[in-house]
Image (tube, rainbow, N blue to C red; front, side):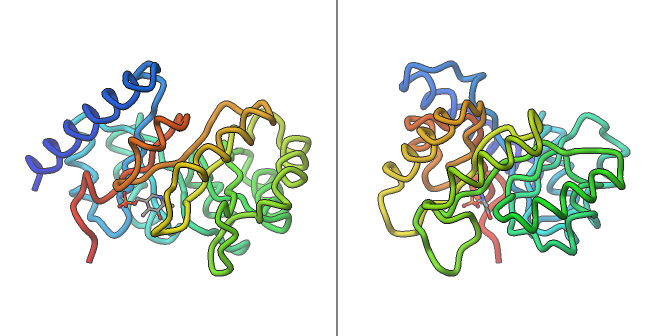
Length: 222
Ligand SMILES: *Cc1c(COP(=O)(O)O)cnc(C)c1O
């Protein structure tokens, strides 16, 4: 397993670098978030051994079980919460995460602000936009995005780093990626988190600064 993860990581890193260069960008301007949801702590440890430091998890409870021991052994690793976040999990998320990528509604902003005050630590934040306006999906609706981003900027200041999205499955993601990158630029936000195993090269061509890649590194999920 360890060799497969190291090989997969090397290949994903090469593909990120090639996509960046192809887009006239620098490879080091695209950060890889290795998405380890449903995978074991051993799998994460194998990725760490292969030089990966930034990880993404969907569920706070799973992250809370997996990451504290890994962090104790490897203080440099960074954890991003990338899944839809319930307000009653905000405090755990603030305690655990370096970045919360899924800030998508005013009540969650309230819960994060409250938790940050209690914990004495504020993670970096991304606003998640529901770029396809899909009813079942997390993210602020496109029509509400500008107002919500502006509110979060006013409230969180520099802790608000950028925007995140997962485009609708089965559609060309490029127009959605371009829309998100344009929105981030308009708000003066440096981070654009978009692109997964199936489409990270397209996302890089459209301006992604972070890509979130799971199965291409850790193998398919059950
Ligand atoms: C699972 C997940 C990913 C990674 O997906 P892969 O297709 O396995 O690369 C990225 N972003 C989010 C929000 C996810 O839930």
